[in-house]
Image 1: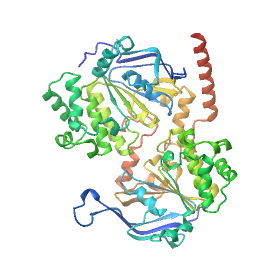
Image 2: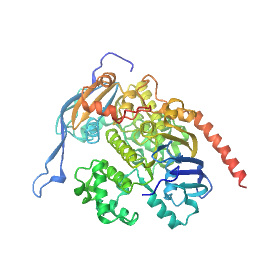
Image 3: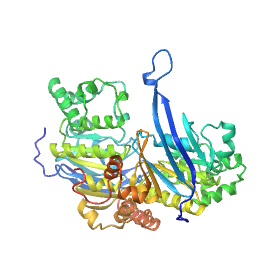
Image 4: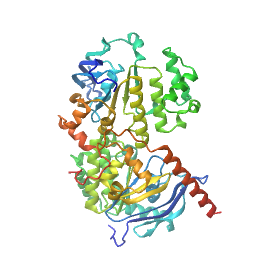
Amino acid sequence: MTVATHKTTLDVINLNIALPNGVRILRDVSLSLEPGEVRALVGESGAGKSMIGKSVLGILPPSLRVTEGEIILEGQHLNAMSPSTRRTTVAKTAALIPQDPLTALNPVRKIGPQIVDPLIRIHGWSADKARARALDLLDRVHIRAPERVMNSYPHELSGGMRQRILIAAAFAPSPRLIVADEPTTALDVTVQKQILRLIRELQQETGTAVLFVTHDMGVVAKISQKVTVLFAGKVMEDATTKAVFTDPQHPYTRALIAATPSYADLERPFSPVPASLISDLHQQIAQDDALYKGARR
Amino acid sequence: MTSTNTTAPLISVRNLRLSFPDRAHKSLIGAAPRIEVLKGFSIDIPDGKITGIVGESGSGKSTLGRVLVRLLEPDSGEVLFDGTDIAHLDEGALRPLRRDLQMIFQDPMSSLNPRHKVWRIIAQPMKRYGRGGSKSDAIAALTKVGLPAAFADRYPHELSGGQRQRVGIARAIALEPRFILADEIVSGLDVSSQAQVLALLKDLARDMGLTVAFISHDLSVIRHLCDEVIVLNHGEIVDQGPVAEVFDAPKSDITKALLGAIPLPELDDNWFD
């Protein structure tokens, strides 16, 4: 395990990601994550929330490239590294809990090696230590017969079980950072609650910082301490979760909260984000883009 | 809804039982054992109201929905649609009823033909049931769901998820059915598109006097949208009644657990306890 000598686990500074045609997917995104903190990245589809985590982990789709900005993980400037050094550094420090557990697991390999191998290969653990840790973690995520599950193939397990296995695998090396990319979107509410509880327990135990990508303001309220609200790749609001729900500053944040069903005001009709607000925001972003282009000409 | 006095049910289900063969445990010879999915219950879907059907995955809610529109035939029991038992009608006898029993699907991308323009997707079933089917008929349906006429010439992949789901709704209401089954129609959508689609469905149901069964695992959506709710667990009804009653005084622990599992957009330090 790395000794946490740095104050922040992750700093993203003025990150810009663009398509080959120059259209920006992320627009000057900055955020930081302290050890043991959960920061929610929230926004609608297309807001670029997943792209932040992917650029940190170095798994952006090949068509996208980082055009500008710094990513500093545990005090190390990732952009300044050679691709291979960067891969090793990220693999040792960070992990991903993906949205779809079925595509994330290799269908022709048993569960056991899929958890154990990275611990041996990347973290240099002995086979015995790695296996013991895997069994321990499977037990921690309430897998009842860990030995049997290690010997199973992914298709033999339910969706909720597979998601718990990926959580165990992500936490096994006690990484400094976990990117959780909509880990509960595909699940039932009751299973979702179990999974959120597990992530929270393990995160508190290991002191891992979590970047939690979601579109659900309800999940944000329960799991995070800090929130970054994104619209069209731009940060609308960056605040503590408490502040966001007691005194949201940005109209878009207020609109997202209002659009989420609650029991508080049952007479209130369904309230989508107003179209006028969306077009205002797009206008502002077009102006930003013009300035950004101008400054770089 | 328009009328507060109790109306006769549009669909009445009596002693409904349905099972599927369990192929995972089939022996080499003979029939596979059967898994009972719906375990013999009776429910009413009131006319002109929105009834929510909730439960976890595997509770049988989608199976029940498919019996209501007779995509599935039950093992036994009655499904009375406007007084007629449709439980065991063959496809020929069902055909005249098909227009009245419409469905909106969870994933509009896979339920809309990707090679057809939006107007054809809406117009085709209209033609089949002799309810018009011209391009202008399709545009009229698009207007009802709040989409501009220009969308008629687009393909499904050119639309957002919320817009596709509106097309699914337009296709269903264009036939002026009496009953619409909506199966998890907003679970793939962003909160904002979700709110738009739900507001639309609520308005259309009221304006057209539609009877809707709305399947969801999200009780907060049900609470806002529905008049009545049925809670299913392992193929049995564990709670039912007007939404306000079921939510204020849930009878079953299953309902309580479902209610407690919804992450509401408000701070709550004790939510995990």
